[in-house]
Structure formats: C-alpha cells, structure tokens
Length: 315
Image 1 (cartoon, rainbow, N blue to C red):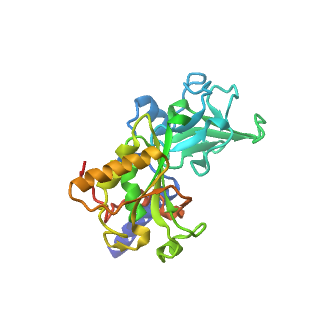
Image 2 (image 1 turned 60 degrees about the vertical axis):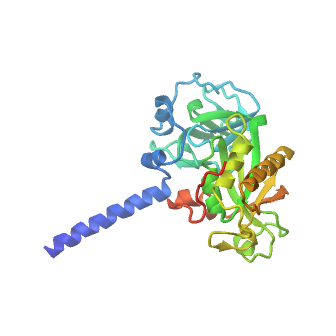
C-alpha cells in the first residue's frame, strides 16, 4: 500500500514540475492569455495569435503597407517592428528584416525545421523568421501575419513619465490605461549615470523610481493617463508611498511637452480645490534609465497586486 502511495506521489510531483517548466520556458499558455488585460480578438485573429494559424498569402492588409510608423501586437499592443525595417519580399506576407530589440521571441517550430516568432510580451504567434535569403543586407526575413499586427502612425505616439512610489505599482495601473502601447520601469531625475537599483535605494543618486509610458494619442490623452496616475497613489505624501520611504519614492511628473505640464498643473489645482495638499513635483523630463529586467512588468510576472497603490476616484 505504501509503495503504491509513493508511486502516486512521485507522478504528482513530476506532473507539477512539468507544468511549472512549461509555463516558465514556453511563455504564456492560452489560459494565461485570457486572464491578462488584452485586446478582444476576432475569431480570425484568435486563429492566428493563439492557435498559431496562417492567413492566406497576399490577403493581409499590411502586405503592401508602406506608411511611416510602428507595428504593434494585435493582442497586447506591444511595439514589435518599425516601418524602417519593413521591405517587400513578394512572399505574400508583411516582411521585416529586424525587430524592436527584446520584443520578439524565437522558438523552434513544432515541425522541427522552421523558427517561430512570438510576441515577447503575450506569447502571441506572429509567424516565422528566415535567414540567408539575401533580400536585405541584414539577410533576415520576419514573415508576419497581418492579423497579428496593428499599425500606429508615428505622429500618434507620445511618451509620458510618472513617478509615484514603488514603480511596480505605478506600472501595474498605467498598463491598464486605454491606448497604452508600452510601459517600462526605470530611474530618472538624478545625477548618477546608469544607476542600478541598489544604488538608487541608497537615496544618494537623486533618482526617482519612475514609469515611462508610450501611448497612442488617437485612442487616449495625456490627461486621461495623468488622472489614472493621481487616482492610484496618494499625491500628498512627501518622499514616500505606503511603507516605502525615501526620495526615490517621491511623487513627480516628468513632462515631455509643454502641454503635459499645463495639464498636470490643472489637475493638481483641481485636487487642491478638494482640500488636498499635493506634494507632486512637476519637472521637465530628464534622462530615463531602464530598470533591471526582473523589475519590468513585475506584478504580471508574479501574479500579485500592488501593496501601496490602490485606485480611488478623485476626478
């Protein structure tokens, strides 16, 4: 009897380990995708991005598309390619000779011969990559399904930088904003060049933990994002947020345009009229240094929620 129990226990442990391995090294599965705050897909888009299908050649809307801008993942909005890397290969699908660094993952296809390309952020299927064909000097062709992509005009992209305590929580909420294309956590507003997390934590570098947000102005506004920013932290706290204390945890907006500065001033005035003593600083953008990879998209990776960033409607 004991021998049988040990055998069953062994198999349970083995199955659990296999599941963990697959999640860790194979990216998000279908269930993971549905649990994320991703765009609603049509049945045709699901067939490509989730079921790893292929659209018919010469039928995609971006096959002969040559407008200046960026191509992002249809499911999660992550920027994948620039129009500068797009070229005509005559294969019937959009072709790119390079990806935006760190945005596309490559894996051996199930057929064991081709190399599949997937969105690094959500794991959505994009197509396949081929090398050695000689189409461009980079000798690489990303063959991508149009249904995996969406196009954003270059002039519609805008960047905003917000600091409100631990950047894990700041990013968690800003990622949920409508029209947000990408977010990255990092350090800005200090004097040390390329600071590390440990250096920033000393409070001696002058940096704030911050989040850089790239958004599509055709789908949202800076004011909408700034409202979300103020509604997900306590802007009256000085150099702290929740249990996190230090100048790196200050509340600060680093504006990238004069209009962003004006909007922030207007929102602060509204909060002050409500009786709040707002401590949020307004500063022109400074050099932004990306944080370490393990800090990026932290709460999505760990499946946890912020401990000191709670949403509270203020506007």
